[in-house]
Image (spheres, rainbow, N blue to C red):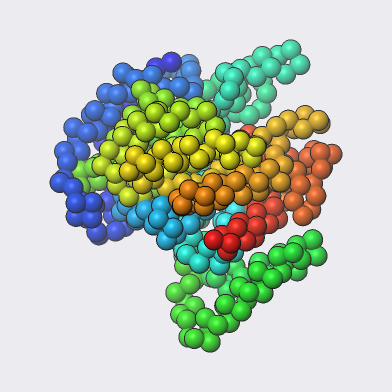
Length: 478
Ligand code: PEP
Ligand code: CO
């Protein structure tokens, strides 16, 4: 399937929050942004893009693309550059990345409470991981744009009825009836507004005192007070001691009331990402202003495909998912295409191998990438290689497999002398029952109680914290 050409964005302002010049930082000459933007738009008609919806009304789509192109950026080039610097630190072990959030955000669940609870979960996990890693944790939500999904089949059949697959709220409706499943380009506009509102809350919750490390630590004390989580009491007590030590030394707790928090999503729907790509007024370079960090998924990372081409033209920090069948020559060519200048922090490989496969599949990749002289940030997604259907028919994951994949990730990197740079997880702040296991011992018959994901199963609040404590233990064993 081919994507359609988008109207070139009119509003090309992408600078703003940060006065540093990207060109000075990156040591690059200013480039002609308008030429680069024209080339990016032209590529839309020339390259094959996998996983795009068949929009039935192309005139309506063209109008929507123009509308999106006229809207303000959601994030700013200067913020993306700071995140690139942060990711560069994670590549060399001076920071650790925590990416987490829904598999698929939905418009209905973009409520203040849900967003707050997801941020809270990530902050709680980050506090524990910071202690375990003894380095700053880079907090990145899979949110404010995670509204489109790649699907293994273009259709879904239920009880003999076949309809187009649900491709995310940005495309069509989850409800299983004919009109609901028709791709509607107006949903791209809704996704923009939902992302904007989400980011507004993210910015408020992470700078307005909610993120104060003392609160976060109190919430974690509540978690270990539960008898099921006694096993983690020792780390919680150690953190307690460290907090009191910092306080006694006169550490500036007021400075810890605010955290940096970034937004990430899969750059899947090019009819959304392209019109939100703007020229940075400081440097002339292009940034996808729909999110700070965008990644290319396992199903769309073809070297000659439109997605890899798209991310190679923007200056955001970029992720690429790598599954167990990733071919090393292709991976090396991906580095050449996405990160030709070998910019520290530019490229992150998010590996999703499966608990039973990671120890065999990952070492060869890491070894050859390292031998090539490239420095990438390695992150473990322990979710997507561990999905299966439970006997009761739910798509699920077992907490044990998730932990085991992270354990394998650390083992592989430690044996090679390379850096395990972070984790990427699907989670929610709610008490859903989507993944099996954990201290609450969720079993198959519990899944139906509160299974809310419209796509992949997420760790619930408790399971997320438990994972953070376990990963903190792994980090502490360095
Ligand atoms: C995802 O992150 O939800 C996803 C679809 O992952 P992958 O591309 O690794 O399968
Ligand atoms: Co998923």
